[in-house]
Length: 83
Image (cartoon, rainbow, N blue to C red; front, side, top):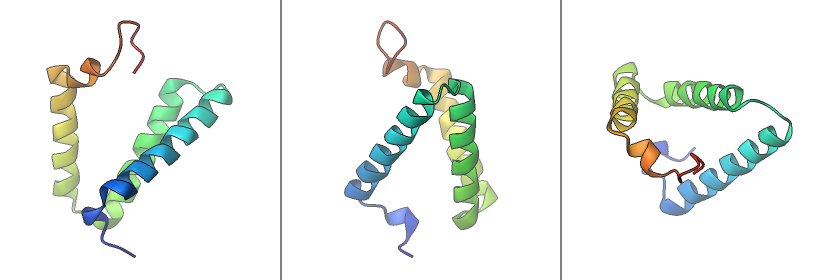
């Protein structure tokens, strides 16, 4: 298996496109945004736990919290709240 920490931009783009399609599919199944996001977050954390230390995962989550608190996530949304 390739080293996950050296993901190329092409791999990141491909993975992002797959996730976007999965989200689109789940929304088409009338799943709530909270259910979709919770499932994706849980799966992401489980995947990270396979290859990273707990402290490294805490660092990622700390950065994510900082992005939420600074409003960085909201900067990518339009006036109607949709990305």
